[in-house]
Image 1 (cartoon, one colour):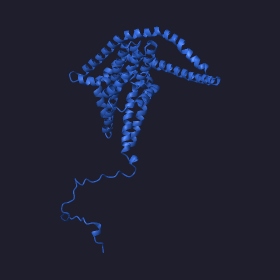
Image 2: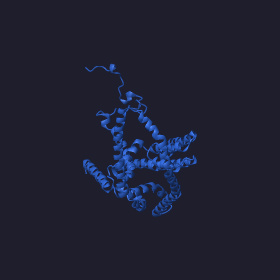
Image 3: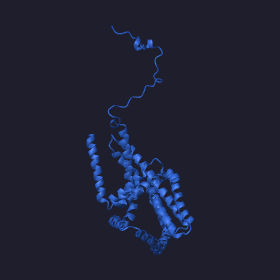
Image 4: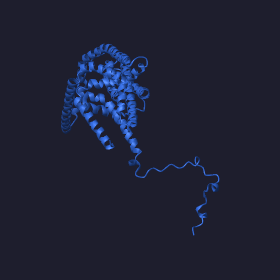
Length: 386
């Protein structure tokens, strides 16, 4: 098979793969989630496999993961339920405060505007309100169609563990089979890039998940100890959203400081709440991320945000699950392409790079030039030809 036919084969294979994901996106959620769970738990299973059969190690790891998840739910659900009830009870007080304090300030600002400014403000507000309502309607429609109708909660709950068990049990066998299918001429290059993708993806997903868990626990405990209402909810949401760079800390900071302004009369208590997030950001940037994620992952925060948003917009919940693997693959392939470009004639031009200078120490002049038949006379000493 020629190189051109190989390229056409792989391009058409990629097109068919993307088309299948697009057509089957409504039922892929439990399978993608099971694959992600198997990928995350494979290193632990490999360690246990040294002491027991693979199927037994898979069963132990999945049962331990399920037990930890159930215990976390049993501990957190009562606390979250109490804070949600407290939030619902506090909502009328916040609405009354907004009517009493915020609306007069807005009305005072509006009264100071000229009629022309009022008309422009009203027109702009109408346009923005229409756009916001359209976005909200599209979001709710997508949430209902993709999040409820297409991604069945029961199927994710019951099918994901089964898929994860079989994939985790046969993980090494599947990797070996895929390795045997690689085209022989490019097999070494593909393996090298696959290892780079694995390092990038494992370093980010596993490391960032640990960072999110640590930050969520810290924020929830610290805000609760500071006496902030709904501190547990705000802390957990901040930790969960920390998977998206800067989003979790920004949302948590704004929410917690806003609640602190409503709740506390003392400025120093509001400063404590803000200081918790400043300390959390310093701990994340200087300790957690360098130690757990590392600086060789190669996924820029902007690229991560773009990948998650693009995946959700194109394929819904399945797209969000696939966003990070696809982003890691694209990032590795782009770096590989840039490396090849820097070594090609497209970068250097048609003229090849100059050869390195000879190493005189490695290739010294002969000690006796006459004996070696070497003529070292200067050009001026050489007689002209007759």
